[in-house]
Amino acid sequence: MGLGIGVVLALLIGRSVAVVLYEVSPSDPATFLLASIVLAAVALVAAYLPARRATRVAPTTALRYE
Image (cartoon, rainbow, N blue to C red; front, side, top):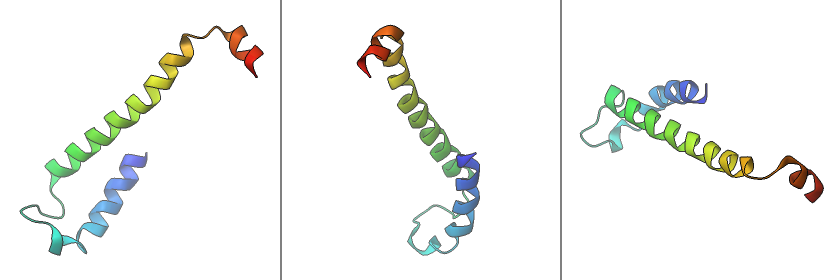
């Protein structure tokens, strides 16, 4: 959902920053696709690593710690 909102906002804002974009159009589909893939991959890794670490702890140990 966040990627969708971000793409729409980037398309709207892209026209105002078109002056500083070199050799890339403000609505370049390849750039939007690549940026979306990279951001989604980073989000998945950021969620996966702590979840994997949490599965290695027994639930009783985690409850006793609190």
